[in-house]
Image (cartoon, rainbow, N blue to C red; front, side):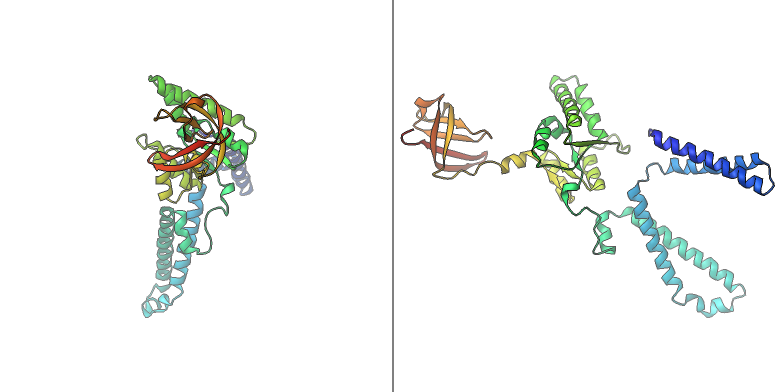
Length: 342
């Protein structure tokens, strides 16, 4: 994994500091300064090795491990305070004090180990059992980051929706989503290549929007055979983020895992006007209907309205009155009549 310049700078500064401290200590105890410098460099080298081993250990893992360690040590403290070492075996043993210290170390070490491992295997929701009135999540969804999938980036409506103010928060685009867009743009199939290029163009527009705070999440490396949708759901859960997607199946899976999923398709469906019998509106008639006397018009959101006895008015914008609705598998079919006198 590529190391950022800031981490390299911190490593260099601490390396120099360790060498300096080692030399200062060596001089203070009447030793050669170079021996202290070598000792300081060796100590910092050990820390660098540990840092490389723990490169994928996140701050969330560290907080879980710290809490688990505290719980394990607390349980060990309780066990050592219930009078186990007051038993005659420890009191009458020739090396009772040494044996007591060994047993205490084993108890503390065992429970500390299991406390850390149990905590690392637990998710944030399970900590609510330990701390009943504390939830590891933000109070409101408005400040939560919003994770984007490939489809919603290609869709292209995101900048316009953000400009209205209905969506807010930091927009997070994972690195593996950008990689998928690049693979699509390099595809030999023209349709996929066009979608990929459109997605990359939309990313440039998103970064240029002043009202949007877009960040690229450098997700840790994952197996190549793991689907992007699975990576998205896991990352959304890790970041406690909302998932913005137009993939209905992905949205269902996210909600099953208690992740808030947002969909433009569902938003558009919720914004369809609820027309009822007697409502009046102006409608452009664009084409004939199934019956020879019918004409068809469309509202700006795509809702189709069938107007009876309006075939001669095709190509005109007329005032109509809703006369009825009919539920269908594709949605509601709305019927209307030309307004008298129109």
